[in-house]
Image (cartoon, rainbow, N blue to C red; front, side, top):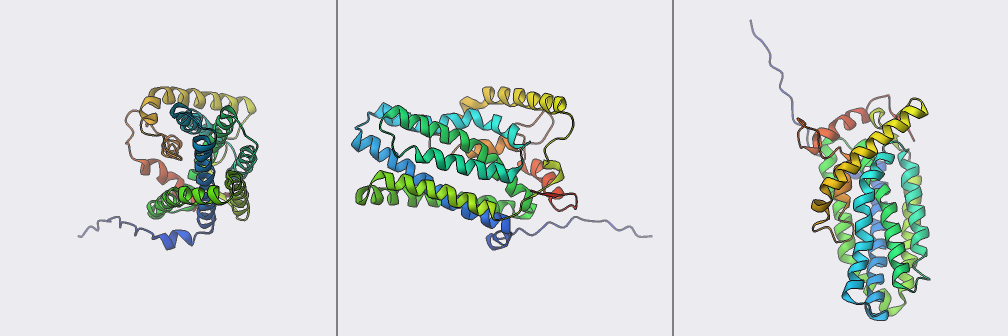
Length: 288
């Protein structure tokens, strides 16, 4: 009598090309490239203006980074609670449109506090875009392609970080900082149009919770309290070394994936991502 032992075969990792063949991922990647490029153009144009035209002090230049980075550290975990309950596609599009309107306010800005306020508002809205984009990737990419998908998003970020400052310097020198701001506005509009051009599939496990309004309010309040405590405990750690454009999105991804884990749960993000990927290919999915 023989007994057969079933062994699980490891899945083959998907390449960049395989991941980009997924329509939603391809459009989101293009939107990420365009919007990040516009972001860095605007941000470094602001730094150039504050440094050489407004003759800002080192403290005022530091204030730019604080205004851009600090809000997202505190708003990000709270934003994730609402993103879990909102439809993903409208959230992404609304975030882009709001950021386009806010970037437009940089054109007439003439004082430090006006610039600080616009950058802080942009950061707060970006706090909603980050978790929604993370859920989009988890919902449409198989587990074997998550590493390639995340790498593509990092390539978009780092590439924009390299090209953006140099391009901003050329545009500010040849034209005006307002040209960089206008490109940033256009980049958000292009990003919104790319996202709007594709249908999103939301897995059953990522649907907004059903039930009575009282139940939903209670669940939202409970999650907000949990995230607030987590933010208070981890803010000193997450803010250390985070003062660079776009850096806090890693914090957003961790909180969205359920970090920090409860006692007895493994500290592996794949543990949180796997259930979502399994549900992404079930017939119970809904199109947004």
